[in-house]
Amino acid sequence: MPATIVLGGQWGDEGKGKITDALAGTSGMVVRANGGSNAGHTISTPQGVFKMHLVPSGILSPGTTCVIGAGVVIDPLQLASELAELRARGVDTSALVISDRAHVVLPFHAEIDRGEESLRGEAPIGTTLRGIGPAYADKVSRRGIRMADLCDERTVRADLNKNFEARNRLLTSYYAAEEVDAAATTEALIEAAEILWPFVGHAEDVVQDALGRDERVIVECAQGAMLDIDYGSYPFVTSSSPTSAGACQGAGIAPNQIDRVIGVFKAYSSRVGSGPFPTELFDETGHQLRERGREYGTTTGRARRVGWFDAVAARRVVRLNGVTEIALTLLDVLDGFDPIQVGVGYTLDGKEIESVPTISTDYDRVEPVLAPSAGWLEDITSVRSMEELPARAIEYIARISSLCGAPVSMVGVGPDRDQLVPVGNLTAAAAR
Ligand code: GDP
Ligand code: IMO
Ligand code: MG
Image 1 (cartoon, helix red, strand yellow):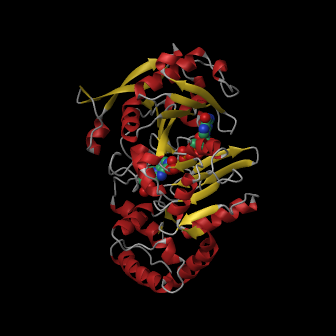
Image 2 (cartoon, rainbow, N blue to C red):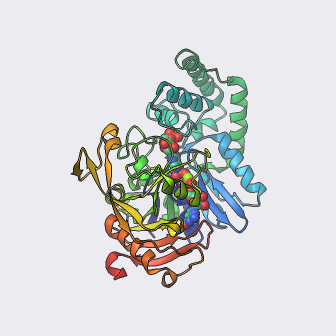
Image 3 (cartoon, rainbow, N blue to C red):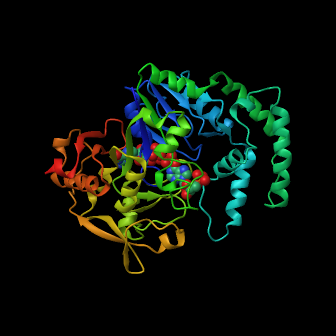
């Protein structure tokens, strides 16, 4: 049975955790493919709200194997504490597999992240300061430490020692920062490695075996395609590939083993950190969107920037990622707005442009072409079937589908597990 990718279609926080959780119950496996503890995936259940950073969002579904793929960068201290917290809340975490090839985020990575941000002065990226960029930089520089190395008692102390020595020199001389306490941190890392070791293995083989057994495998991406290192608004991006191609690479799945790519999109837009955002709202409407959508970061608590749906960016993401269906989340947040605007085009220096500018200072100057949709001004949070949705909400969904070039298959009407409405494969034609 082929695999399904769940990816963020915008700048992250689209509700990937909720969609992955919804699919996990009927799947054999959920594999996290990219990113690290910069991610925060929320699942709101009758047992309370769970916030996943490194653990795949399938962990709340008993019997579903959860895999952390080779494309993820793992902070062992964070992962050990996340697992302990889940267990303390009664979650069975035994069906976890951690790729031995996944790179390790070490404590000095966060310090380097902080140092790089301060060197950027007036134009910081606004990273999550979790050390993600520096960890991926070490990976591609071929000086990283992988989970297999961390768990190898023969070499780990020497490897860590060498790393700490070099990085502490860098921290003090180049970043004018404090040294990381190498001895204490090494012991903490080895302690975490002992906890994680039983779960570490050849994840890609485990994933391929599941596909070979005809199990449904969900690949859960972190971040969003507009934050992709190659196709996002560089340099205001993350350091991995939150795309369908990145999902294959990070999970150890071949492109021809994928038959479904679910692009998760908010019914409007949000972005954390700096970078171009043409449809951003700075006015009272923006304030209301932020409050109604509770747009405060899961990982950092930062207020998210908000704006109208950007169909130019979304259409590009649908094309580049082969999105076969859209999960349109947080539609209920738009209950209070009439009209609802949608960014349907871009202008730069007064001229319409067809594509997304490559240079971020150009992208920053882009003005959106907004087109209104009629609002429905009704509470849809208790809607559970397509028939109960107001006609104007269906029109809005159909319009998003038509602008993006993919059908909408499900709609989020609230944070809870049951607040997800299947809408068939809604397209503009089907809605008529
Ligand atoms: P992720 O990183 O893509 O998993 O998304 P986050 O969990 O960071 O952010 C999404 C937020 O929206 C969380 O607080 C979710 O509980 C919430 N959420 C998800 N779907 C819906 C929805 O359909 N309606 C509302 N109101 N909230 C939602
Ligand atoms: P989930 O998986 C939203 C953003 C940061 C910053 C940029 C680079 O929850 O959707 P990084 O720490 O990755 O070097 O920061 O990327 N960012 C996210 N924004 N959701 C996320 O994850 C994010 N992960 C990183 O805010 O702008
Ligand atoms: Mg998030």
